[in-house]
Amino acid sequence: MNMARKKLQLFLSGSRSYIDRIIGSAPLVYFPLNETAGTTANNLGTLDTAANGIYTGVDLADTPAPGGGRAPFFDGTNDYVNIYSTALRDAFDGDEGSKMIWMKVANAGVWTDAKVRAGIRLYADGSNRMHIAKRSQVYETAFYYQTGGAVNLLVHSTSDVNWICYVMTWKVGAGGGVYGYYNGIEFDNLGPIANSFAGSLHASNCCIGSYDVTLSNPWHGWLAHGAVWDRVLTPTEVARLAEV
Image (cartoon, rainbow, N blue to C red; front, side):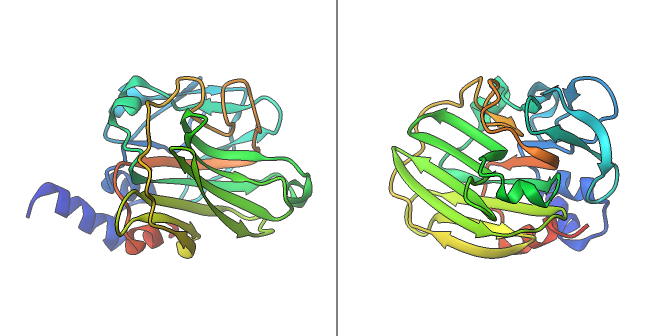
């Protein structure tokens, strides 16, 4: 049995810890966000330390995280994690991939505060970008994928104040589309996608907890387990990601 298949079987079997299961799925970048000190958000994905992130302002190890450990608090004003690296830029596949973020709002009022609040965002330019973020509309989360100026938008309605596992997958071309998952269950999809993702990721606009390093649309609450893959996760794999 080859190593990749063995890792995938371990991922699906549930025989590993939550963090080890995610590592076994071979993401490019995976940030558990479980650090207790410092400013480095350690990448446990295949790009290794060349793709580490950088914390700004967050309160580390603030609350119990899904799957064990502790997660940081983002105050809704000036906190974020910069996940851009040249390693991620060069390995990222805007035409096919997946991303995940676990989100928990600070309180029920966040869902009705009429503000956009970012979970995870990847951005090349104004015509090629994608994110998972709370919308300004009440009780809504946006799964946004734009290629060549054409927008694909999925909207999930929730007032959940517990931890939420959101996963988005995308693939350009025949048989492809954008799929949104809430706690391991698909809630909607759009496709096919005609336009390819153009351009390289931008150094100031790839973040967890904000749209960019200038703190546009900062998250208010807790975030954990941010990850990006260069392939489309299967529904079975996504369901496993939601099991802690």
